[in-house]
Each structure stands twice: as C-alpha cells, then as structure tokens.
Image 1 (cartoon, rainbow, N blue to C red):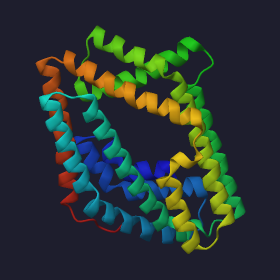
Image 2 (image 1 turned 180 degrees about the vertical axis):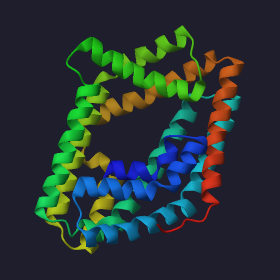
Image 3 (image 1 turned 90 degrees about the vertical axis):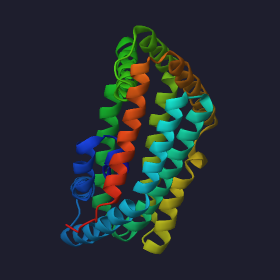
Image 4 (image 1 turned 180 degrees about the horizontal axis):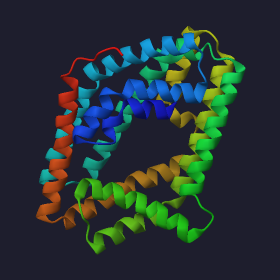
Length: 283
C-alpha cells in the first residue's frame, strides 16, 4: 500500500515538468499497482478507480497548497542559513503531512480492501515478500563494503539533487553520517515488515469497511505503537544527528550551492502550486 501512496504523492519525489506529468497520471499508476498487488476482479477495480479519482481530487485541492507553503518556508530558511531547529521543523511537517495523507487514503480505500478474498491477500503477501527481498539485496547486503557503498551513494544522490555538485569534504561528512547510522536502516526495514504484517492482519480480521477504515488510519497515524525501544532510540539519534549534519553542511555551502538549494525548493513550491490550480479530471 505504501507504494500506492507514493504514486499519489509523486511530486514529492520529483520536480518540474516531470512531477506535473507524474502527478496528473498518478491515479492511473495507483490502479495499475493495485491490480498487481491485489489481483483485483473487475468490480473491485472499478470501485477502486472511482475512489482513487476522488482521493486524487481531494489531495490536489487540500494537500498540494500545504506542500507549496512548506517548500516556500523551507526555501526561505535555506536562504538565510539552515539550523538544526529548521531541520527538525521540516521533518516534523513532512511526517505530519504524510500521516494525514496516508490515513485519508487508507480510509477511502477501505470499502474495496474489505472485500479482498484470502487468495488476493496471499498475492499481497507474496508481493510484499518480493519487494522486501529486493530491498534487502540492494541496501542490506551481507558484504560490508558493498552495503556501506550503496547506502552512502543513496544519501549522496539525495543531497546532490538538492544542492548540486558537492565538495570532497561535504561528501565525506555525508558518508560518515551514513556509516554511523547503518543500524537505523536495518531497523526501518524491520519496521516496514512489521507494518506489512499488521496491515495484512487487519485486512484478514476486519471485513466491515466502517470498522476497517479507522483501524487502517490508526495504523498510519500511530507508528510508534509498534516500534521497539531500540527503534525509538536510534530514530531519535538519527533525527538529532541529521539536524547537525545539515547545519554543518550549510556552513560549508558556496554561494552557488546555496542558490541551487533555494531554487530547488522554490521549484517544488511552484510545481505544487501549479498542480493545485489545475482541475482534476476523472479517467
């Protein structure tokens, strides 16, 4: 289900014209993925189509303006210099918006999810297992050198997307952070698997949409309830260290890099505003 949610929120992962094209076609992508993950019959697929279109319209009207405001605020903070407090503000806002978005999507899909048969849930479990195997192979290799190289590259690519080219010193600082938080990556993967098991259990046990919807929303809104003490401890350390990482990097930004960051965030804001101004059309 998280992949469906990501498809609906595609402009959070890309920018400029690509984001606009991706967002306008997100409902089609979600339906395609749902058919793959759940093996829906014709009636289920048609019901989901209508619900996804309605959700997409709600998201365009209600959430995209908030995303635009968030990106404009982040751009302004980047222009004057980013502090650890700014990072905490950004993380808290992004997570809050994701939880609201995910809970709404889950509740809206509940009438379809409540009709899933045991064979369809077996398909979902199989897809989860395939996805987890692929993730573990890519990011959690037993080869220490390979694992660290891949995790560092993943983080470096994200920073380059926002800041442009990095200096060797900046890259080394980011790589140290990635190396110091390898356990956090493992714990997040374990949490992902725990979430998947909880989701399937809810789908098996609750067949009334009025009962299932709120329970799915609660699953998204309160992830801390399933998380271990170790996860909470490591997540807190990751958040604090990430804030320090960004603040440290901010002090080393060249004028060109800072301008790149400011413009990149403004580009996101402009994309969200443009998308919010378009009328959603059912497909």
